[in-house]
Amino acid sequence: MPVALYAEFTVKTGAEDRVAEMMAELTAKVRGESGNLVFDPHTRRENSNAYFVYEIYRDEEAFQAHIAAEHSKVFNAELGGLIEEDGSQLSWLTPAAEVES
Image 1 (cartoon, helix red, strand yellow):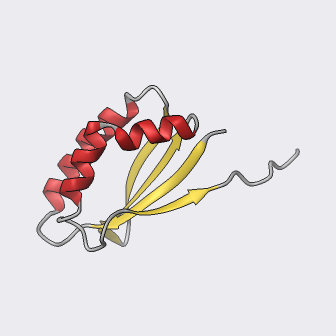
Image 2 (cartoon, rainbow, N blue to C red):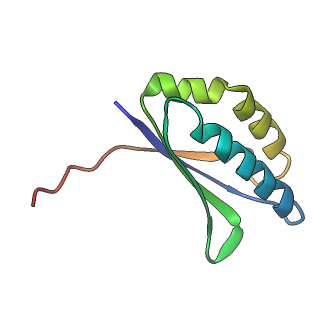
Image 3 (cartoon, rainbow, N blue to C red):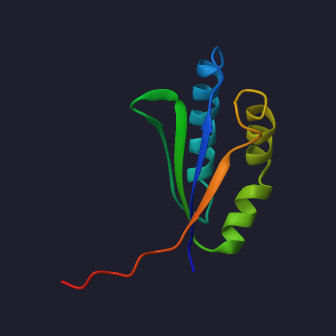
């Protein structure tokens, strides 16, 4: 069963360029993970420092491999000092019932 979630965080003033660079590097690496199906980072229109990252992994094993990957560990370790929250705020998703047409 696929694992879907979104991560949110707010970049501290002055760290915008570094986080944008980190996110670009992470995006390329995560999209290369064999179990990653979707990794789409966005910023909010009303606040470009507020990130929203939509993610889908093939299954729980693929998600755990993502979390354990060195690039994820390095990203999260550095990100902690550059954002307002204690870490990325994760929201787990469940597919809604499909609408029949």
